[in-house]
Each structure stands twice: as structure tokens, then as C-alpha cells.
Amino acid sequence: MRTLYGRKANILLLPLDVCLLQTVDGKEEFRPSPESNRLIAAPIQDERDGRIGLIAQYTWPPREGMPVDPVVMVQMAPSATLRGVEDLRVIASQAEVGDTVVCVEGNIEGKVMRSICLCTYPDLTHQVNAYHVEFPQHVGSRAHGSAVRFKSGQLLGMLIATMNLNTGVCRALVYPT
Image (tube, rainbow, N blue to C red; front, side):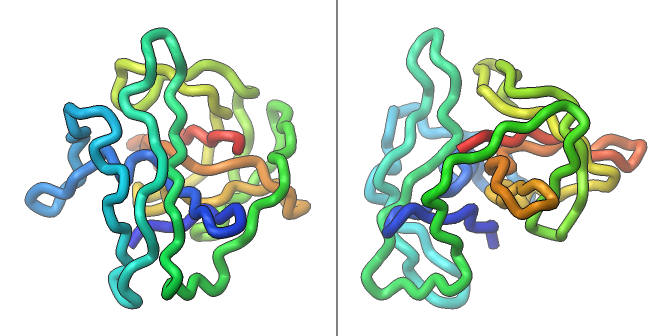
């Protein structure tokens, strides 16, 4: 089960990897559809409660020379009951290098290592504008889509990628939304 980042009114915001990764033999693999926007209107389901909604918008691959937009917009189903999914009608705050942030999924504290910059997207071919954040422990890929906040509770953005190192540290990308 994936973490839901939040919503803006009746539009859910999810990480792009829900459209790009497929589970094969119990492992997630990067396998995007070769057709642009092929998954528009594809259903998003909850493992317990049924249909959440339909994919309304995403962009893959990005246009030539443009950074990746790592957010998938999902139109909520009328029957969806998403208690606890925050309505994000705020603009994410700016962070400085050294700021302490918290990954909501797992309540893991980390530090901003680099301000927003053009970073290599996990497919190693494209770029994305994101913060570099480091967490002192591993963070699983199921946390992609989690909100990352300042200790004050203000929103920084969405966790979009993680790389767990042998040292026990996790390097992550956080997309400001």
C-alpha cells in the first residue's frame, strides 16, 4: 500500500512512480508505458476499501529539455472515503540547507542537504527540481508520496525518491508542491 501525499479539494496527489513502477516477482521495477499518458482514466484502488479514483493527469515522459513533473493527479471517486488525507491548499515553504524536516510516514527526522536544484531523476535519464534531504535511517519505497514537513508542521513537499546506503543513511529527493 502506498502513502497518499494529500489532496487539493477532490484531486488526490500521488508520486509519479505509481505510473512508472511495476511489481515483478515481488520487486518493483522501472517499467513505464511506452505510450505517453496511457494510464489516464486508469483506476487507483485501495487494498481494503476499493476504488479511490481515476488517474486524471500525469506527464511521462517529460517534454524534451523539461524537468520531470513527479506528481500524478487522481480524481476521487464519489464513494471514496479518505479520512485523514490532508487537504493541501497551502504553498510549500522554502527550506535552507541544514533545516530539520520530518518524513510524515514513519516520523523520521532528516536534514536538508541542498536547496532546490535540478537533480537526476531515479530513471537516470531525466531531471527534476527537488531538495536533497538526508535521513539517518533507511526509508522504504512505500514511503514515496509521503509529506515532508518542517518540525513546525509547515509543508516542505512530497518524498519522491529514496536511495538507502550501506551506512544506514537514506538520501532522498523531496519535490516542493
